[in-house]
Length: 174
Image (spheres, rainbow, N blue to C red):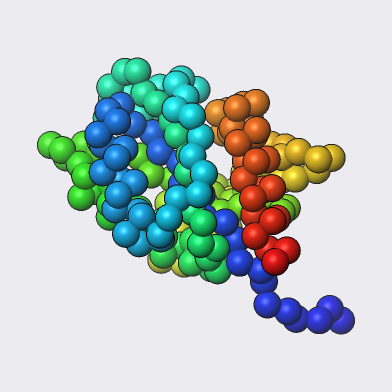
């Protein structure tokens, strides 16, 4: 029988899809009020992997990721997804979102994303929220799973998450 032990805290990651930088700035400001200081931010990258958001947001979409200095309990991710949905709605204009906010968490072994959509590879967390392992760490790098979105398979994304993993490992070895 295995010994039950508390889980280590995890690193909160937020991904944004947006068109205008001012919308991103507003979302980041609201998230900082809830989660504190940002400790890492990716460069702004073009978001071209799917046309899914174009009707709502328009063309020339961008993607950026941030992580927060303060670690969180993994079980908070469902409540965080509910909060980010409320922020998306608050920042909407004419019933259309101005920013898409995707929360998740990272630890030494994996990147987990929260979703409101069920699918074969997602686990129900409660209150309409699901979790999926999007990337797993193997052979010194993060790797995509069978169901991983195309953009999360990119070299740029994986390089960012590898860097955040190093920050996380340094934080949890103290």
